[in-house]
Length: 96
Image 1 (cartoon, one colour):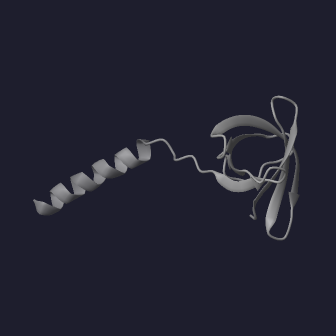
Image 2 (cartoon, one colour):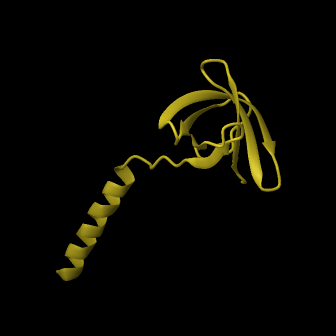
Image 3 (tube, one colour):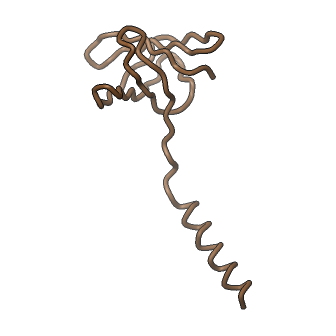
């Protein structure tokens, strides 16, 4: 009986875990011009033409930007993104 209850509890926990929405992960870095800490979502190296959500920790704001270029360096990845206002930002992200 004890094993039956443990199995039912485990099955319930697993079904809840599989139905829960995935946790959005973010990728940390900084703005090359202002040195503000930023994170981008999704947590992967984007391609030119992709859109990413850029969260600025200093102003606690989020904006969706268009990726213009991606440059991989030895320890970092530099993203040049265009903001909705038309400005460009260079984001230096942790190496991947």
